[in-house]
Amino acid sequence: MIELSHRARALLRAVAAQRVVMSCSCEPDLFIDGVACCDQVTAHALARNGFIRPTVIGVVGGRVPAELTEAGRDAISSVPAA
Image 1 (cartoon, rainbow, N blue to C red):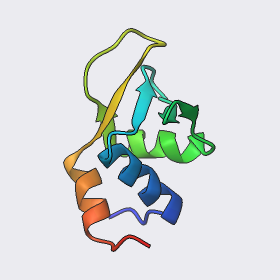
Image 2: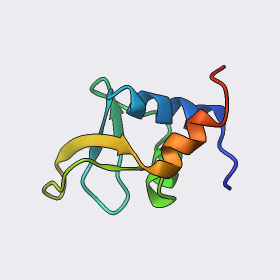
Image 3: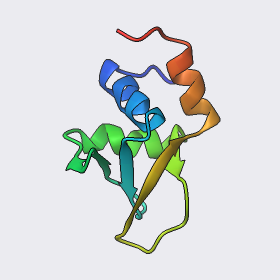
């Protein structure tokens, strides 16, 4: 299992709360409550490592809601919130 930082787990909790949209690209950017995420390196890693995914297929450059994968749900359920 990949060790996730506090920030990565916070991003996953925001996705779980349906506050996040992601850009449609090979390295998606995250937007929380309409504001660009300050740590796109972590955002990219969460998508690349299968913790989050788009809810629908969108047009390249567009934004779609993000959702947790099973791995993402497991990651935040296994560690108590700080």
